[in-house]
Length: 215
Picture 1 (tube, one colour):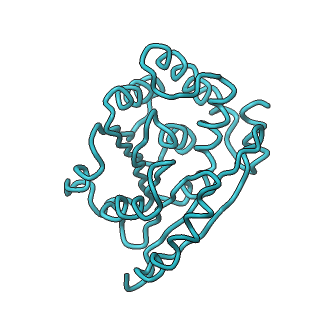
Picture 2 (tube, one colour):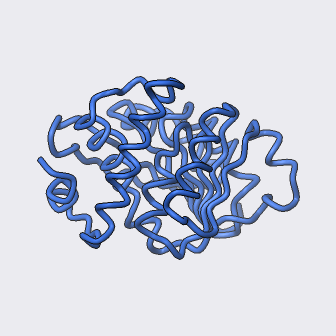
């Protein structure tokens, strides 16, 4: 199934003119991966579904945001696909692995992605920088850590009323049940969106967390 067809299956409206840039991202990932081992997935079709399409399930959240931070971005997912599809959205991506950040920067130059910043740092260290604290209304984390840890890592970066989106597999349902009471007690609201990727039918959970009033 072609990329555009997969996105259509999920109800994600993406300008067909952007497919060339998204496919170029896949080309570059495959080329770099052969030399620098950026991701365990080496099959093109699998990269399209499990990196690109998976990342773009964030579109409904990204399109209503003003500035996005992607924590533990790895080889650039979801940050790079979101930036390609939402070119006016300022995006910051952070990862502690330098070769992965080198890839971000290469793609940003190649595709002329304005206002895209890739930072090689530990998340905890970046949180100490006043330029980034309380600076984002959308903070994302894809398969990063436990739900409780994601909230702890993301909180210093959030603007009042901002959202954290934890992207997980089927284990996300279990984590929501496990942590819901403690998160609600500390004034976090939780919404769970469940979906399946169009080819493999792999389960995905998008967990939206917001600090409620008075939190």
